[in-house]
Length: 146
Image (cartoon, rainbow, N blue to C red; front, side):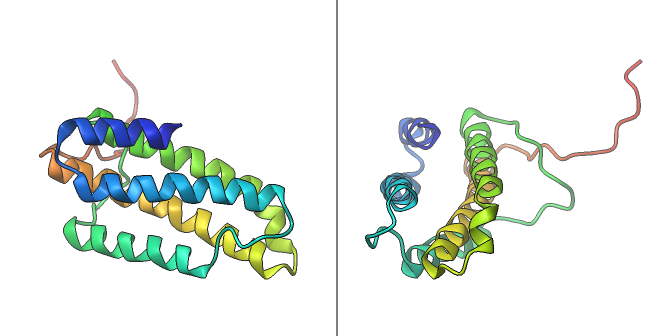
């Protein structure tokens, strides 16, 4: 649902045609992942899906800069929604940890996909900041507020 909301907000801005196509693909793959996790049989997700996400990560990384500090979710609705997608994906990743203990290669691919997807959301948030000309909100050690 958050991916759909992010896609809607990006579409409304008219600046993210390519990325909106990617998000539509990801929405379908996330449904496939849900089917794969609830059903032992079937070819719902494979290593090509993981490679596709990695390719998009590489594309976005080449278009953005690496910050010198942690990035905090802030700046625009699209940036914040990308971070929400990342947070939800990281939660799923933690819940999938027992899968990594199995010998099932398909399950390991599912876990890889979720891991790469959380990285995708991070670089997408940076791309949103650059596209919208918004300075990244970087973490800094803060003592007390007076």
